[in-house]
Every structure is written in C-alpha cells, then in structure tokens.
Image (tube, rainbow, N blue to C red; front, side, top):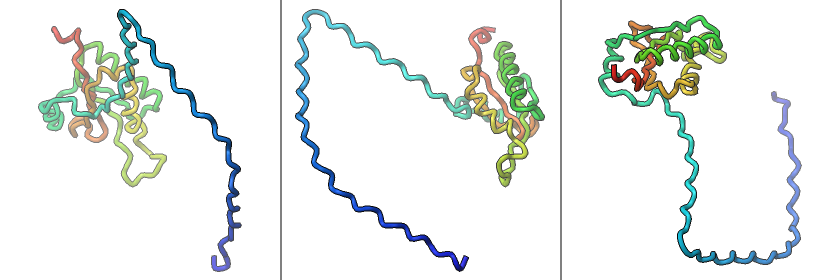
Length: 176
C-alpha cells in the first residue's frame, strides 16, 4: 500500500466555441378557432386512472376489531399452515384457502407463515421467505378486493410466525 501512487488523469480538453447556428423563423401562430352555431358537443371524458393498490395494513378496521385482535379474543374461522412449503406451493395453498374462505363467508383467516428472518440475518435469509413474500402475494392477489386488512397474530395463535387476514363481508352473506 505504501508504494501505491494515485494516477494522474489527463486534463479534459478545452471546449471549443461552436459555430453560430442560423436562427430559425418563429412559427406562425395558430389560426383562430371557428365559431360554431348551435349545440356544441360536450368534451370527451378523460379516461379514469387505475386505482393504486392500497396497503393491506392500512387502518381499515374499527377500534373494536384491532382491540379484539391484539388481545387474542378473535377466533379465526379457519387457518392454514404454510410453514415448510416451497414458495410456489405456499402461494397455491394460500390462493385456494382465500378462495374457500371468501366463498364460504368467513371473516378471519389465520395464516401460519413461520417466523420472519432475524434482524442480524444477512441475505439470502436462512428463513422467512414465505413471510417476506406474503404481503406482495396478498396485494397482487385476485382476492385483493376482498381483503380488508392484514394484522399480526396474537401469541396464542402463532405470534410473529402468523398473520390474521381479515376479509370483507360479502354482499351475499350480509343478509343471513
């Protein structure tokens, strides 16, 4: 290291003065609009912008839901265990479970994912691949419109290794 000297870079060339470009004539102003007699058609509506995907952890639940979930008083309608699956088999199982839960009118689905990676863990993580991917899966899922919120599970239901998926009440099950 002691014998290493910094390289000397050659000085950049001095910029030469570019020749003056010919001045282009100014564009002609647009012709005045014609006056139209009678009814003028309404302007076409602008196309609607697609709605941005909402975050699933947004405050979409009222206080009683969050209070019951945090105290462990909510009993899940069904649960699935994705722990030990590959990413593709876990995604397929989650999609099938969401489909069943929505069609049967369930409100709370407990998803056991396994614990997230440790804070001191370096990539690639030794564990937590399903837990890391599940947020993206749910946000981009075909069932995304039916999901009201995703919350961490109470310790009696799996703690940091599990999630509650709160589903919206479907219109066909409201009148029961």
